[in-house]
Image (cartoon, rainbow, N blue to C red; front, side):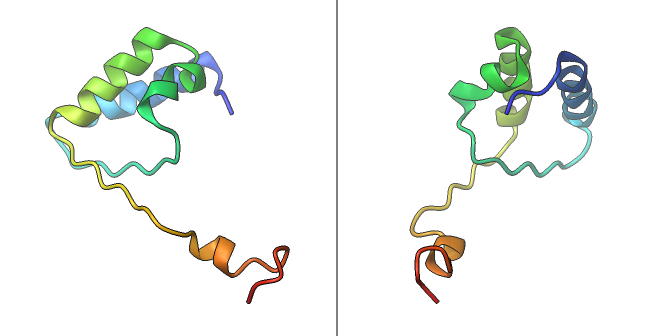
Length: 77
């Protein structure tokens, strides 16, 4: 779900102010290639991603979702 431009700039400011000064943990299920759509600005997304990945570590989890495995809607328990 896209966020408005002001919130996208605020997110960038938080990430930028932490860049090379503090640790930051971000979680998302959205791949980097789609961040421009979410943030509403491809250049802002690229600058944000640049700061995240420069000293960052990407941890990707695979496999079946615990929530889907326990889903009552799917008849699982």
